[in-house]
Length: 336
Image 1 (cartoon, rainbow, N blue to C red):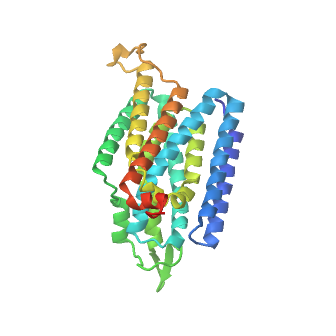
Image 2: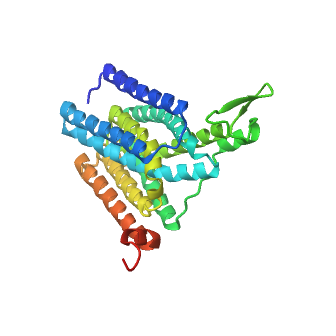
Image 3: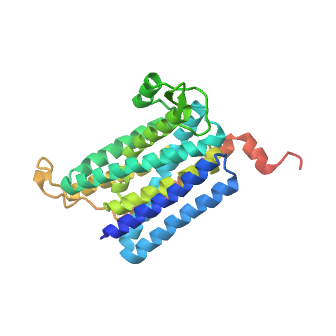
C-alpha cells in the first residue's frame, strides 16, 4: 500500500483540526454531556471511520480495506476495556462529572502522541528485524492468559504508576479543584491541581494499554498508515463512549474473556507469520517453515466480529439474569 507524504499530512492535519475544535469547545464550557450530545458525536466518529474504511476499499483494494476494519474493531474493543480503568481512576480521584470529559480529552490527546511514537518504533523494528513478530506474538499470548486469569478473579483495580506517585510526593500541589486548570499560581508559587494528576494518570495508563494494542494491530496489518488511522478513530470516539455506556460497562462481564480470545488468536497468528518468514538460525536451521499457515485477514475479521458479538450477547444475558432490578425494569411490576 503506497501512501504519499501528502496523504499522511492531510490525514494528520484533519485529525489535529478535529481535536483542536473539540478542545476549544470543551475548554470554554466544561460540563457533563447529555446522552443526546454524546450519541450524535459518537455516531459521527463511527460514521467517519466507516467512510474511511470504504474509501480504503475503493482506492486500495479489498485487502487493505479488510485490514483497516479488522484493526479498527480490535482497537475499539481494546479501548472499551480501557474504560473500566478510566472509570476507576475518575472515582479514585473524585473527579467532578462536569470536568471528566475535559480530563478524558486531554488524556486521549496525550495517548495519541505516545501511540504515534510506538507505531513508528514498531514499523522500524518490523522493517529491520523480521523476528520481532515472534516477540509480539509471544507477548500477546502471555497478555491473553493474564487477562483471562484477571477476568476469572474479577479484579478491576487501579494501581498508580511510579511516575504518578513521584509527582504526588515531590511536586507542590493544591488539593482543591479549580475548574479544569492543571497549573495554578499560589503566593507566587506554581502548583499543580488534582486535574494535572488525573490527566497524568489517564495518559500513563493508556500508554500501558498501547503495549497490548500496537502489537495486536500489527498482527492484522503491517501498514503504518492503517495502524495509525485505526488508532486515531478508536481513540477519537472513546470520550463519548465513556459517557454513553458507563453503566453498560458493568454488564459486560465476559469482556475480558472475549479480549483474551482475540489477543491469543492474534498472538498465534503473529507467531505463524514469523515462522512462515523465519530467518532465525536456531529455528528450522534459519529456513522458512513452509508448513506454517498464514491466516488471511478476512478470516481474522470474521473471528473478531464473531468473538465480540458472542461476548457482548453472553455478557448482557448473564448480567440480566444476575440483576433482579434490570429484570424487574424490563418486565414491569408484578401483577400488571
